[in-house]
Each structure stands twice: as structure tokens, then as C-alpha cells.
Length: 220
Image (cartoon, rainbow, N blue to C red; front, top):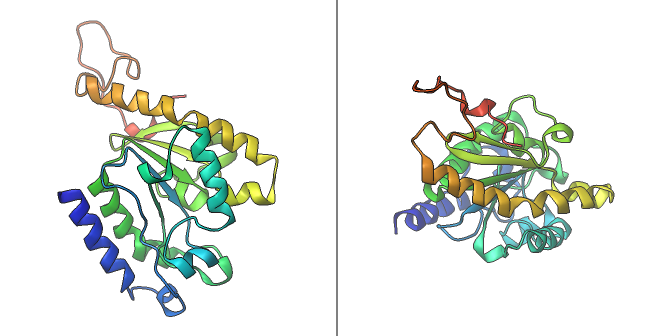
């Protein structure tokens, strides 16, 4: 299977990567995990202490909350793909720096290309910034955009709800909408390439649809 082979190659490259300074103090790189045919891909920001210890994404407190959120969405961890924008732990859980994000970007690009998920869920502002420039999570959370023929929805990082408990309800509500987004993604795929979809693109009678920049589409 080509996708699985590609993911295995990326995994091995990440584990020995020395491209940026994050590799200097890591115990384990965290490439990501999940099936090659996952319909939903979750992208966090970077590994934390427990992820660095185990080499797996979202296994600490934020990971336990993610499991609850997946349950709210009617999803199981083993059926989704989970990764981060940087694959090694930033020291003291600091924010990833621009050069680190840049050096790690091609790994994430290749993971997306291999899996071709129907829905991408970004968790946190650095993950969101990979797809939406100058976005504000407070304004965009739970909303989906069609970007490069894929639905991308922005959500708060589960760790944020650990520090701000009021956000847990927001996250639960946003995650509960993922099933609807999957249905929307299947619909888009079924009617493509006819006008992208008539419910997303208004066209004049008997005329071809105008060119549209997909990243500007907001579905909800």
C-alpha cells in the first residue's frame, strides 16, 4: 500500500532527523500515528513531556482529554491520524520557533499527501497557521474551510481547556460537529468537479462558475 509505505518512510526519517535544534535534546521524535486510510487527521503543535518519553502523540493530560473529545465525535483513536506541526519537543514546552516550523513542514506536507484525509482538524494556533494566515481561533473555531480540496476545521488545542476549563464545552461542541463535516466532505467528493459544488458556489444560469480561491470559502 503506497500510503502506508510513505508514512513508514516519513516515520523513519523523523526519528533520525537532525535538521533543527529541537533534535539536540529530544528523547524520542514523535512522527505521528494512525491508519494510512484515515478520513480525519488531527494536527497539534508539538510533543510534550510524555510524548517525548514514549514517542507517541497526545499521551499526556491533553491526550486523555483528546480521547474524551474523540468519543464525543463518535470517533476512535485507532481510526484517525494524529500528528503535530513539529515532531520533537520544544524545550520546556515553549512555542515552536519559525525555523523549526519551517524545517519540519515537509514532513507534515508529505503525511497529508500520503493520507489524503477528508477532514483536517487543526488543534491550536500554530497548527491553524499552517493553513490560515493571521487567523484568530476565537473567531474561527469550529468553522470549516475548503483548502486545496480538503476540509480544514480550526479548533482549540485540548491543553487550552486544561488551563481554561470553560473551553472544554466549546471543544466538545466543536468535536461533535466532525461527523457532519465528514458527510460534507463526502458530498464535495461526490459532486466534484462540477462547479466545486452548487451549494458552495453560486453560479449564473447556463454559465461556468467564476474562479474562486478555495482558502476564502467558509462553509459554516
